Amino acid sequence: MWFRAAPCPASECRMIADHLIEILRCPQDRSRLHLADADLVMRLNRAVAAGQLKNTAGEAFEKPLDGGLIREAGDLLYPIIDEIPVMLPDEAVDLRAFA
Image (tube, rainbow, N blue to C red; front, side, top):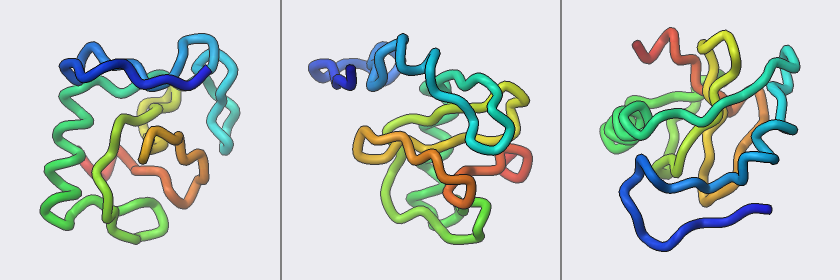
């Protein structure tokens, strides 16, 4: 079940029910995913606002991220935009390049 809580601090909001996170897998390597923490999402959104955050296809993000799903290796983040996880490999963020 997808849901968005009433307005709350980013660290407390859950856009994706836990049981769905358990089901979702990275489309590239089938590894488990976990939610990005609020600090990382905030840093990514600062990069979006500055026009500096690009996906793995090299395209800049135009909308801020609501959150993100990070694969087990910690190197890729699949963005959550408009409350929808975007699970396309070309739309992922390479966190190694963002560091």
